[in-house]
Length: 320
Image (cartoon, rainbow, N blue to C red; front, side, top):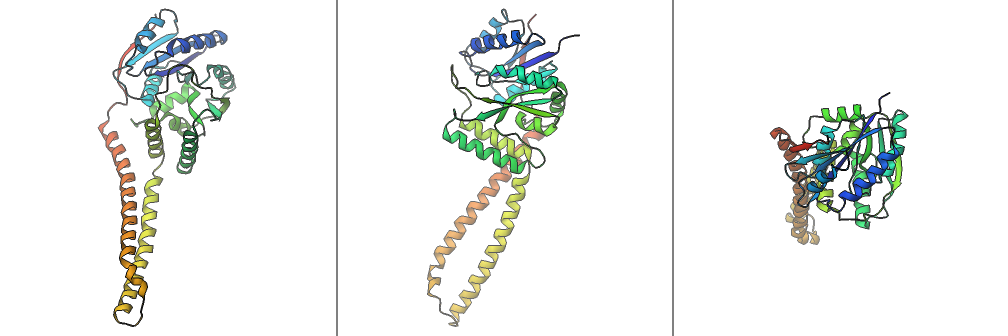
């Protein structure tokens, strides 16, 4: 019986210090799991250091290594998508090069895969290694995305690191949108899912390139491609504000008429100007917020209509 092929997809951007450590570790894991054939698809995402040259050099040592070179830096999500597009495996495992996604989990993932699971998520059991800001924002992100996603359940504390079967990948690749978020796409297509938990270690070599801006971009993309509920929320919020302030305006008008006709003396109306200013500022803020949300959706729609590729592959160097 022919061995099943496992594809490990690893995006790399300026990961020169990590390349030797990652490939050495993954080679050990491959040796331990000799019941499978492996290919490692390393995606160079427009690195400015010697990442690409190192990868080419290591192809002489590791026959399992394939190198995908993007024409420029497209970002982490695009690099993952590029790697998935050329993956040949029966099981596919995206993983980061920083070794904070422990390659040791590949073995239990494959065991669950053999039990019939099409998706095996690697879930962080804790986020103690993260800063309190990252823990707080991550918690808020997952709560918001869970509220907005409806029938699609987005697993908490699960990044790109997971195993997916060939048929899951085929369904993901069929999705027509050009703006892709892998951690949303996999739950969207469904299939039988399991998980393995792990405690994420600290990064020992190099430095992270996933900054606050990247996390904000990911959050916006994940929310806007998952649901149109923010637009519905804006509509409902604006409707209730209209009712409340409409009644308030009528009340103010009645009180003003009563004051002018001397039917009722209300000294506090002297403060009406300040009330008007505060209400105006509040409404302006709400309007700007609503316009921002709508603009984000319009921007996403504009990008989709352009039909630009999410990434451009300059070359794929096979290891012969």
